[in-house]
Length: 212
Length: 156
Image (cartoon, rainbow over all chains, first blue to last red; front, side, top):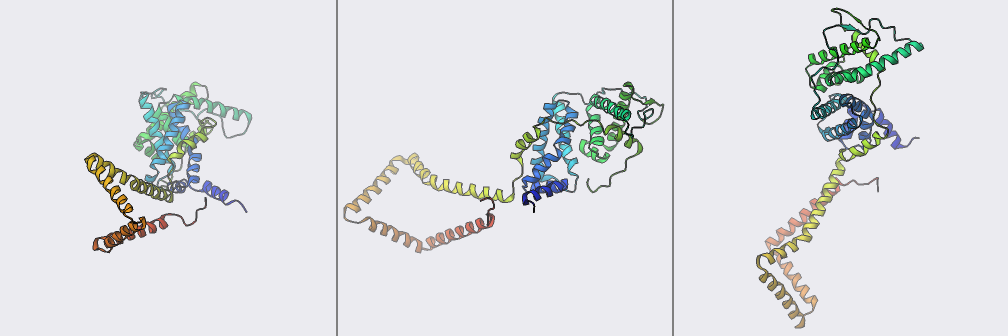
């Protein structure tokens, strides 16, 4: 028979985010630990992408979790916990950017009207050949650089959509932006990323009037 | 949000998802997890039992402090208000006690007289009310303590 505390830990690890949050609210140390361990990396990823300073990102991640624990009594378990936490993280990072007077409106990469399709001209990336694996790595590296060149609002929607798998409504709730603005930002961000890929010689043919 | 139906991804979204899947996530330094746990631990919510114990402990400490400091404060206040009267009252008390003792009255007789005075006070309507009030307060305090304190403590 396994140790009861070990069984408790396993149960905690298998619990849903909302269940963990409720248990943490009632003072379960295991649940608090699990929430930190489960979300420290996604929260850090979002904040680090926004503030682009690793040590500052660690400080802000810590601030985010402190705010989260202080506000846990107000969390509604009917809401998705990750979205609630990301909203705290996003606000914390945006406040930090504002304090550093980082412009949140100026575009930093090509956002002209040119429509670019990064998928057109790219070889099939689903195979396992060494060439395809190498190409995937190159594209990932180029996109990694390109994301950092986006303006912060675009970075946030790209990370929330494609790293954290939030849908548009959830992104709107996290960022406090209208749904239409979220879609516009995502569209422009993808267009800018496509331009970057094209400039790096990694595919994408310019199409007039086509979707990005 | 958890109850909301998630929209299926359109082809463009799926394509971008495939492209961005391999983009590395930013990661904190190696010992960050440990530091984060240590830094946030003070802000973790506490169990209700713990909060009740803290409240009871704080109440007991406050009551003990009040009982200890109360007479001191009364004496101090007397000195501040009228030092001469306070010194005179204390001196008279000692003179009265010494006079009784030198007159051949034993300390037990003094204590007995004091006891009789207290008993007479208790027998009065006011004294009875004070006594009943005290008993009720003590009974309620004990009932409250047994309710908020765990019957068996696993960590002892």
